[in-house]
Image (cartoon, rainbow, N blue to C red):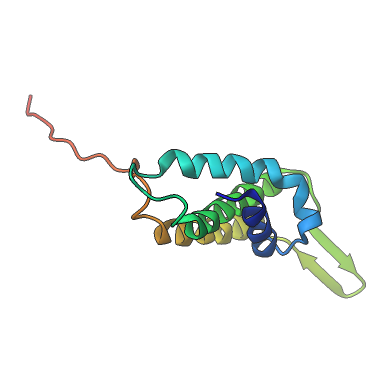
Amino acid sequence: MDIQEVLKRFAMIASLTVEEAAPWITLCEDCICEIKKHVKKGVDLENKERQLNAAAAALSFYKYTLYRASGAGMDSFTAGDISIKSEKKTSVQMAYNVWTEARSCVCDLLEDDGFIFERIDSI
């Protein structure tokens, strides 16, 4: 997977320039590691790099949005009669939707460890 490609995609999703996104490169690297950790055995990483990069960028955007929402950044801005308010909950939900959409595009490449089906014996 290519960190520069992930950073570039992350910047695009987050509406940042590549320079503005640069401080978040470690987050992107962590997300690449997280995606790689869940790739099924036998998947040709080189052949599927583009899809996996897109998933890592979307995961980076989701985590970036969570971090930004948890901070003490500006929530609203007022200038005269114009008022703009940032809705953190909506931003996080939209970022989560971006991540789940990207994850669904690579679900055939990743191990599914989010569901367990077991039989329960009667007592």
